[in-house]
Length: 189
Image 1 (cartoon, rainbow, N blue to C red):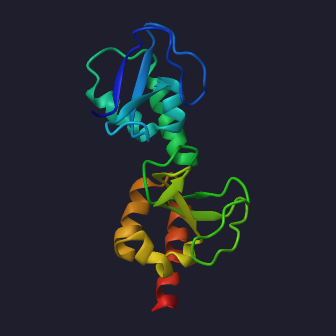
Image 2: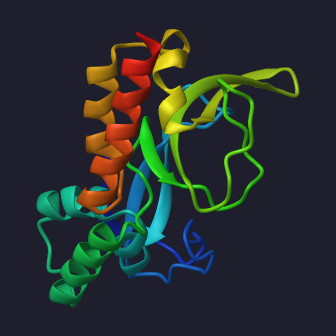
């Protein structure tokens, strides 16, 4: 199963972005999602306009496969371009770089708080919640990444490749964070 665009079959599904109902017959984007309740993936539904702002990469790929007519496609394209340019889009997967929305997260390596609005590197880690093992985000200061590579897996070069593929920051900001990751790697050596 892959991400898909289709007309809503009923009006029962809600958009996972804005939380409002998706009307019967409206175009919607289904994003493949793994849940803790099933071994098989399911689809999380989004209005196509909501997806353009928050999931532009996923929507663009699904639009390329969609054979039907898409109303206001030019507006969707502009919204997707703007989301990627401003960095407001959700990351595509792990690892990624973003700005900390709060000051509550702690670095997995140095255990110091990651200050609000500063850059952080998110990596996938295994968590145990209520007796269930699941996977979720763990956060690191960019300079702490190299010291935590045994938990992250892979090399610094592979991690940087993943950051470039998954992050939704403007290129100049992403280059600055990657320079900090590389500096941390040099310091750790």
